[in-house]
Length: 86
Image (tube, rainbow, N blue to C red):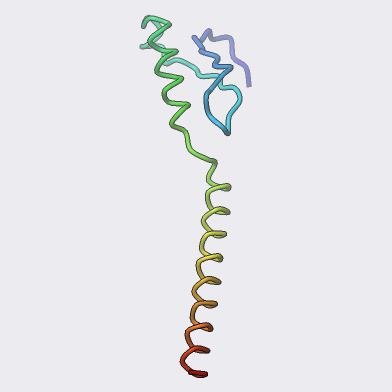
């Protein structure tokens, strides 16, 4: 929804973040008078620190868990086989 209110925005085209190509940030009215360079630097710093979207994190976490469980199971089978056949 678009309203007839003017907002100050910062558009960052190079986010330096592997997940996000571009960001548009709306500046709070009380900070609209702050120097543009300071706001842009803070916006870039914030964007660099953004992590992977939570959906991607949970998939990576699940995959690591499955790999760890498989490695543990294989190790257990090998140790049992060595003990049994030794």
